Length: 308
Image 1 (cartoon, rainbow, N blue to C red):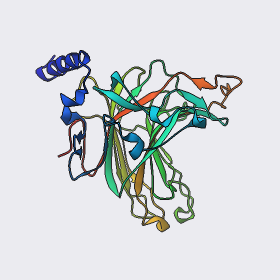
Image 2: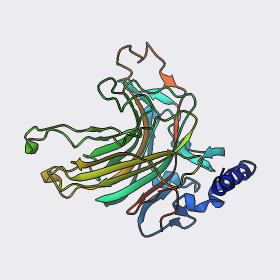
Image 3: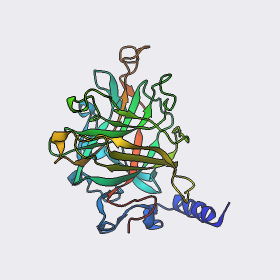
Image 4: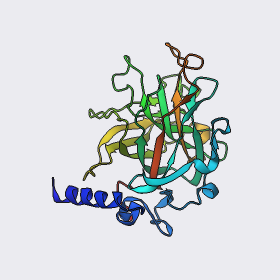
C-alpha cells in the first residue's frame, strides 16, 4: 500500500470513531466549503451537511409515502465520508411499471457545457430493475422538455453486450428520428464503449463524473463523457467508461434551450416485463435504496477534489 492510500485508510479509520462530518478532515473532496460554492466555476454544490435542503430542493415521494424532511438522512457513516446524504428511501410501486421513492429537483444557472460530479451508494441488497434503474437526471427550465440521465443499470442483453444488471449508461431523449434528420437514426441509449466496462456492486460507494457539451442545434456534434470508479480507495486518475461526440441534445428550434435542473430519483423499471414482478406478482415496496452525496455542477472538471 502506498503512502497516499495508507494515509486515506488512517483518516477513514479516525473518522469512523468520531461523530463529525468527514468533510472537515477532507474538505477538498467535497466541492463545497462552509460558505457554499467553492469557486466561480461551480454553479451548484451540495454535500447535505447543512440541513437547509428543504429550501433548496423541490422534493416529493411516490404517493406521498415519505415526509419531504426524510430526503436527507444523517447518522454516523451514512454519507460519503460524512454523516449526511440524500437518498431514495424504499422504493414504492407506482401502479404502472416501476418502483421509486423520493424525487427531488434543484435548479442551477442553465449551462451549455458543464460537468456533474457525485458520489453514489448502492444499498446491499439491491435487486436491479429488469430494464433499468434511473439515478441522476437533467432537464431544461422552465418546461422540462429536455431529458437526459445517467442510469445505474441498463439491461439490454443479448442485443447490447455492454449492458446488463448494474451497468451504468446514458440516455438522451432528444436524440430521436426527428424530421430534420430524415429518419436516419435513433440514438437515445448510449452504452459504455471504452473497452473497460464497470458493473456496480451493492454495498459500495462510487465516484461519478458526467460531462456534457451541447450540439449545434439540429446537428449531431454534441459531446458526452462518463467517468466512474469505486470511491475507495481513491485513485490518482478517473476511469473513462463512456464517450460520444455525436450527441444531438438540441433540435433546430431548440437553440435557446440549456440544461438547468438536476434531479435525483432511483426509478427501478420495468416490473411488467416477463416474468412479471409488478403487484400482485411482486411486492408493492422494495426494501432497497440508493444514496447521493458530494454533488457538484461546474464549468470545469471536478474529480474528487475541490474546484479551483
